Structure formats: structure tokens, C-alpha cells
Length: 521
Image (cartoon, rainbow, N blue to C red; front, side, top):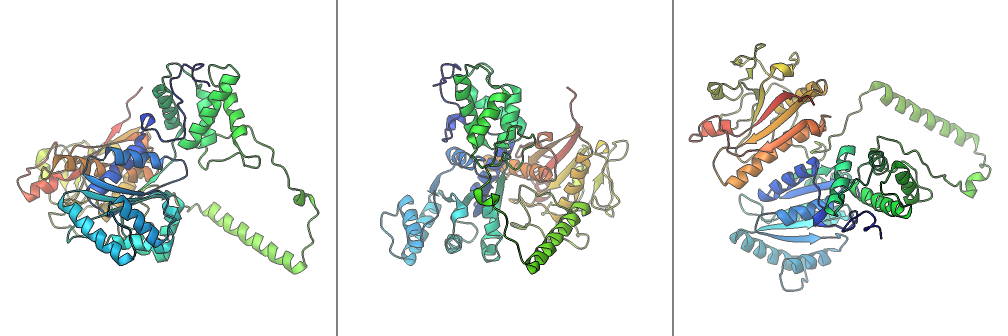
């Protein structure tokens, strides 16, 4: 209806998934790199969670479509099935060619199928969408499927995709066996205001738009209403184009968005729909008061009133405690320890690990001869940025250390071969660097991952990018703006030591973190 009025060739804001309109922001690229790595390396269990409408399905479709691997994928769109129905669904999608009558029959066929897929170098992926609908019994049965494995690798990757409440399901004590097996996970967060603007402009451009249709104040109002939720953004933008066409307005302004927001809300819905809205919505819908609420309240007994008073006082006291102690913790959107712990607190100072581990963080200068320092040695930059000196008795994690980012040239974190896990002492250092970044808003960070030159190049590139994104995600979880951090993987490029020896390769498996002044505009 409004296409010709706005000179568009297609509707830009349909809520159906269309790969032509795919837009990937930084957080989406991180998610894809993380999940692809988990599949490529047969990590077993993967998890992608996010709120309703944040783009989980779009991400999964993009991942499956662009996965450059020989793979067999079974997608379960609704896991609200009984066990035998679930087995028969998998048997159909995996092409078993027969109906399943029992669990034993299914497991025998599945094992034969997985071994054949392994022999032909094909990866098998079971993708369970709407995972929050899984009941405990079916969740346990899915976990047991992963027990069909070879000596050194998983034969099936199980990928859970669900709404945020699936995290709470995993935190239940009875689901700890599943929780502890999740090796790769990502929480999709809503778009920020800048990303929302880019998302809208991208879809208009793909639809053939060549002129400015949404004014900047209108985009601000869109973000205020949607909180960065892509699905809600599509809904209100489509509604705004229709309203603009009816009013013969070539440019959509903030007033039209406010009117559309009022029309979209349900009659009794609170105006503040999203959780992370930063700009208030000015127009509010009056809420009708139920008739029952207008009747005089029934008088409570004195005992009931006394109990209510005690409960109210306790609630106020608890709220006051948290308000004034200021010890509330900020949640980390990626890899929460309480979901699947990957490190154990260390009570004493860690001892240097063997040379092959290469897991000690260090501050590095650019002189190549310093690359031969042993793991566990800490190389510091001096006040004049001269070549660092080795000090085995000094650690980056000592409480008295104050990180002055202007004096630090580079931070290097080393990794084990085929590993993406950070050591405990690296977390301590990253925490302190994150704190320093928060007090230095003019500093940007370049995170670059490297590998040795053994193995397939595509694998090395993927691993190095994944390791770099681990560091970025951790710093973002500590409050550093994603736009201040760039992450890239260069694989075996730029070796700092020889790849002919195990010692040299251990130095080349690293992530380099560089701190630079933000360029002036």
C-alpha cells in the first residue's frame, strides 16, 4: 500500500525471516563466531539464549546457511513432544527410513548413523529451538544422546536455542548434569540506539529506499518504545510507514512514532514495555480501573493487619540494605560463571605452568628477543616505554599494582594448543584492565588472536577469532562499551617465535591486547 509513496520496491519491515534483509551488528558477529567454533570443534553442547524477538532465529538460520562444513542438521522447532514422538522425529529428519518402536531401537540406529557420518567426515547437529519448553525428562534424554562418542571426540553436537528463562531451567539442581556439559554459550542482547538506527537504515536500503524516511527524533522514539528489540522495531516501523502514508507524510517524525506506539500497545499494557529503555515514552495509555477495585476494601482482622505490617517493614528493610550497601553486581551477558563454571577461585598465588601450557598473561614490548621469556615471567613496560624487564617475583595481579594504560604497550595472553580457556590469573588481570578502561574513556582496545601454523588454515583463523572474541566479550561484560573494542583473528600470521619447536609454537598461540588513544574527530 505504501511502497510507491515511499519509492520502495519491497516491504522493509516484515517480521518473517528473510535472508536478504539480514543485518549483523557486533554482538551478532560475535555470536556467530562463537557458535561456529563450537560446532567446528565438536564441543558437544552449545547454548544460545535471548529475549523474545532479539533475533535468535535469524542468527541460527544464518549460521546453518553459511556453515562451510559437510553437516547433517536436524532442527526440532517445538520440543514439546513425548519421548517416542521425539525419537521418531529425529529418525525422520536423519533419514533412518523406518518408524521407531522403542528407545533401544532408536539408540542402536542412531549409533550406527553417527559412526557412518564420522567415517564420511560429516558433522551431525541436533538443533533444539524453543528450548525453554523442554521438560526435565526429555532434557535428560537429550543429554544422554551425547554419550555416544568416540575416544577423543563427540559424534553429535547438541545446540539449545531458547528464551532467557532457559538459563533459569538449567540452574535447577536436577539439571546440573546438562548445565556442566555446555561448552559454548552466548546470550543475545537487544540492540543499542545506534545499532537500532543502523538496522532500520539497512532494511530500508535493501527495500530500495534512497531517501531519508525516518527522522533522527523518530528513531530515538522507536528505540524508546522497543528497547532495541528487532521484532518490535519491525512492527512499529511498518505501522509508522502505513500511518505516514495515510497522513501523506514523506518523512516519519517522532509524533507519528508516539501515535503508533499508543496504537500497538494493548489497552491495559504499561507504557514501559522494554526493560532497557533509556529514553522515556511520553505518551501513555490510560489504564481502566476494574469495577471490583472501586468497591470499598474488606476490613482485615487485627492479626492479619499486624502480619502485613511486619512483612512490609521487612521488605522496606531489605530494599534499604541493598540500596545503601551498593554491593549489587552487574550481570555478565556472556558466559556467566553460575551457568557453567569454567574456572575455580584460587586461594594462593598460582605456580608457573609447564612450558606447553602457555597460559600466563604478560605485558609485552615489541622487542623480539623478549619473546623468549618463560611462562610465569612478567614483562613490564617501564615509565619511559623502554624494553621491559623480567621480574619473576612480580605479578600483574598484586593488589598494589595500578594499571596506567598510557604506560602499557601491549598485553599478551597465551593459550594451550586447541584450547580456548583462560587461566584464573588472566581473569584477575582482565578485571583490572576493564576497571582502567572505565576510568579512561578516551582509550580504545584492539584485540587480535593468533595461532601457530600447524593444522588447517581455516581452523586456525576460526580459533584465533574466537579467542579474541572471548577477551572482548569478557571486557564488555565488565561494562566496557563494545564500540571501544575491535576483535580480529589472524591465525598463523605475525609469528613472534619459530613454529619449528614446541616452545616457539607455544609463544605464537596468543591473544594480543593493545591500548590506543581514541582518534580525534
